[in-house]
Length: 344
View 1 (tube, one colour):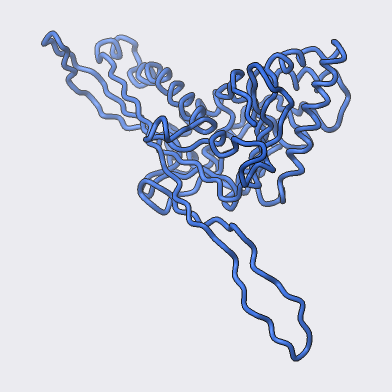
View 2 (cartoon, helix red, strand yellow; view 1 turned 135 degrees about the vertical axis):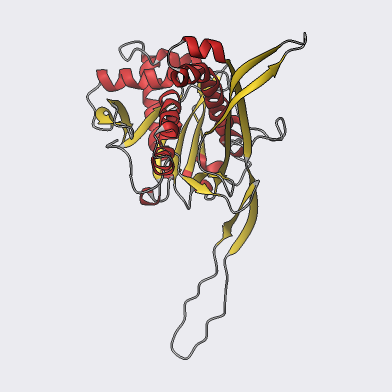
């Protein structure tokens, strides 16, 4: 895709390198089609089996003015060690071997039976990327919303902006700068990035009434974690009123809609300004279908070089139209809710 920095590995890159048969590449393509966040994630192998340990800079060293024949005292930066968890997501399919044989193409039939499982895993992983809560699901990993949850009282509150809504259902727009020193996904030692498939072959399925059936069995596994190494490279625009965002679907409407449009674009500009160094990361905006549709209407109805729709090809070579803001890709992610609660 023309809008992407191609110097860092994504899920598509890993799939192409690690499976020359193309089978895993097909799976990666299916996932990216239904969840565009996978187009941009940078993946790194974890330094542990079930976690990734990272040192985060929490303070800069002291520096001093000096002169000839004067000494300089030593100083050092301050660091904190954080262990980021890795969640393991699994699904299993069992397909009647007779039905597969009658289809005329066993492998294609089995893949068709697996598509629903792939979509379910995709939706669950996307939801965890944003809303994962280890206090609720201990086996999962902590998502972005749990890390950027306060406007004023947290160390990273400078990167949590308010869309202005104080009551009612809300939504968020995210700007994430993916990179090996900023924000990335991680997978365990001894495995590979992304969703993995194991063909378990023909097995006997046992039913509660004592009957048995021969089936083809497939196992899908996806081990993934999220690492925010530098909190400055993710920005949340929270408290966007769902009702107001729905009104943005018409840019020729009331003055209130025009005001909401301006506020959203200004908030996105503020988010861009929060990223310290765009050259260090692969930035992308993420929003749900409601917000994405609204911005598409704005891009089509208003002449602007800031918000635009561009023709480009995906990493899998699929042509399409892609929206960008200040040159940063805008991605649709249906896992992002329209029913978030207001944060303070």
